[in-house]
Image 1 (tube, rainbow, N blue to C red):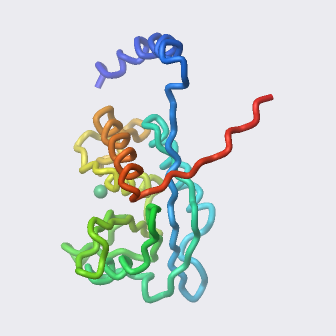
Image 2 (tube, rainbow, N blue to C red):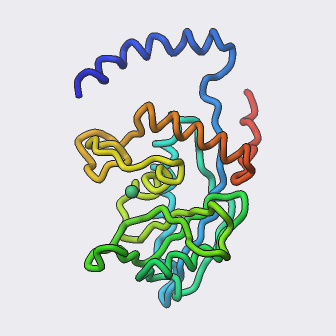
Image 3 (cartoon, rainbow, N blue to C red):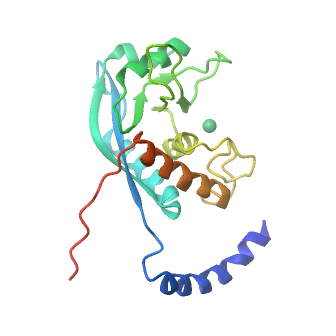
Length: 214
Ligand SMILES: [Zn+2]
């Protein structure tokens, strides 16, 4: 795709002018809280801290150009009965473990595909079905077999993005030759959904103290 690449120099030139014109930093960031629930089995949590840190860092790198950052604002564990998710019912059950005002992310040992039972998924964005769940509730599940950008991909779904067929796009199954990215339309959807999540109270952003100026 040579054409988008050719746009970069022009964008680079425009960026400082736009920043001056608006007289404030163009990079306003909404920090959104993740409630992280890790399944625990006999030998402990199903993933290591470094694994979690890498998933989170990659998600933040991918969302940063679109004004969203994530922080873990709650750590929880769940028992072995939730470690291996075999069917839709097992996924729905996690709907009982949700946290208000946060994005719930569940880390599990295995996540069987519910359509092709011979396959295991790396992650999924899920809406629990049933009267007992709050209307519109949704969450992400990531399996320990996941590649390092799967949390970012599932969060992409959380922000309303469907799959892409563009190789390298983070919402594509084809990793392509370039670092993963959200495209412009996906970025707009992320900003739109972030504002909506905050406006409706579905998510309450984390206010971080600004770094002291030297
Ligand atoms: Zn997907």
